[in-house]
Image (cartoon, rainbow, N blue to C red; front, side):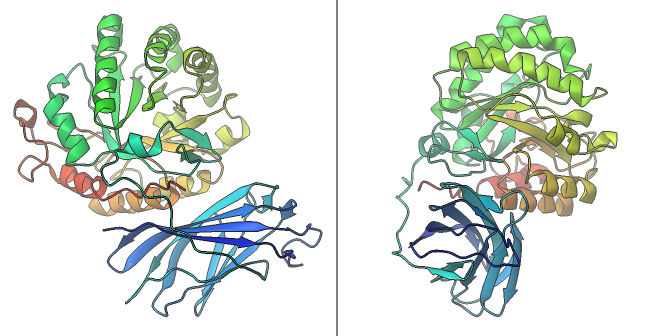
Length: 456
């Protein structure tokens, strides 16, 4: 079992800054460091370190600590420049987090390896000054608590999706196929299996607008979506309501439909803790400015009924941050949607989208709150052979960056991206090896590992 450990160190000593980092920086007068092992497996672990400035504003910081066991090694870190010499680890703030106002925090982290024991660090220093204090365990998390029970209503903090404790979390789950085609796959038995056997944190509800979808029966499809929201809620899963626009690619084509739909579902579900809104699935053949214009008209409709919910905005090039159109995240960074509590969608298909896409996500994640609302283990067509190596590389990256994801698809569609073999949805077994495709087996194995949601 993965364990959640925490180290809380409080320092009251005046902290000086190294001249090499920031010659003109003011000194800090206090800090807090929270060290948490978020995941642990045979021979490896992932840890998060939260540095909170309790004193005067500082510009430039260097965190140091010693790994107590000689077998512990840093493998890869994020949100800081990491290095290790012997047992001594150093993390230096980077451009976007090197300045900490009073009360501000920097969340950094790393993956590591160990042989033998994996004890927690016993001491931290900030800019060379020791931080001392007592060790505390985090509040206990109920063993039978569902994702919604533990995390409560979500919000965006910095570049992260955060829970009711204001701590970054990652949700892992599955997306439906088009509910107009595969409604028989989404029943009490299948959602019980998804919540209890797969241990999924969320269900993405893919409501196509065209392709025999919402435009043919707005009231009927709205009712179906609301019913699936309720079923997810009853099982403690988050529900990601996906306004699945694909053809035509300009979301403004469906602007009035979107306003009508989101006004209805937001008003109906505003009091729920488990609802997230995805307002445009995969914009394509359209500029970022046009997508931004659409978002800035739809988001106020949601906010009028549900002012606190997280909203996810699709990006250019089939929600690739523009990479599939020869662009990158800079167009969003320089011209963000004028709204708060929002995230930006990123989609990938592992056999088609590899290193250059992963590089973009790694870079963009330091500046934009990202949510992978759809991805596949196969090619961008939804078919072909599963690329296990690329899929694993993607999932490892998303885990490291705490980026939430939903896999396409929890269905028995006759395509290799489907998690279930054809004919599965006519029965009642949605979990055993006999009904899972190669893709389904890989995803169930990843999703069903225990979550380590921080609660302190």
